[in-house]
Image 1 (tube, helix red, strand yellow):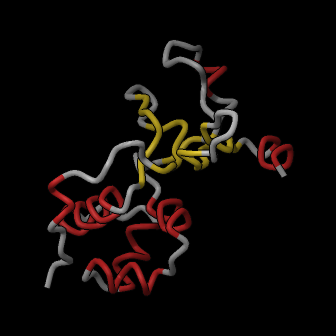
Image 2 (image 1 turned 90 degrees about the vertical axis):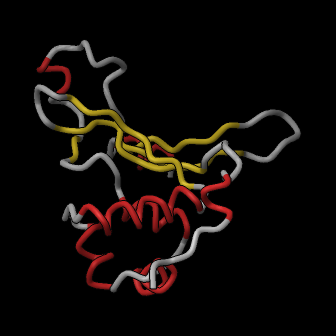
Length: 140
């Protein structure tokens, strides 16, 4: 499976040490090792239009669009649209905060010249949930 996903340009992530479980599991699109590589080198990698992948975050949580909609107070249609790349500021912030409070870390970096994003993906955050999440409530 690792070879299959690697050949498709996807890196499987995780941190392991002997005698411990794998932590910070996740996946992301492979990306150049530096922002300073040539345009030709960058062209070999998958890029995205958006900085975050809400679809990947939902998969990491193993939830359906309806469940995410219910937990966030957004409509299922809004969740679906945000996963497709629509950028509605208030709804985007709501969904981003929800996933971050659930322990999802968003990965990737932007190339301002190409206006594209490399290495987009998700993994479990190493951080404990902060105080802003302790009282997180979905909007009415």
